[in-house]
Image 1 (cartoon, one colour):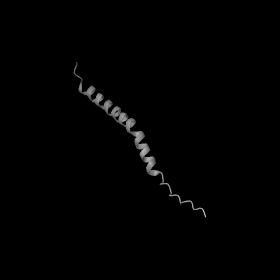
Image 2 (cartoon, rainbow, N blue to C red):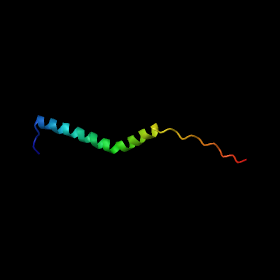
Image 3 (spheres, rainbow, N blue to C red):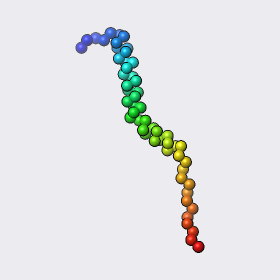
Image 4 (cartoon, one colour):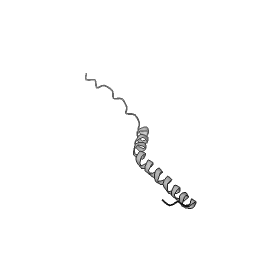
Length: 53
């Protein structure tokens, strides 16, 4: 394996971080969005019992 020049190594590292971030975002975003939507949704109001007289 050939040694990478310092500039090429820096470019490689700069390319790896965005890919890692995008991968993690793609993995966790559906759960985060679902969690956020559940927090915004108001709790259901309790229903009064039906009284037949």
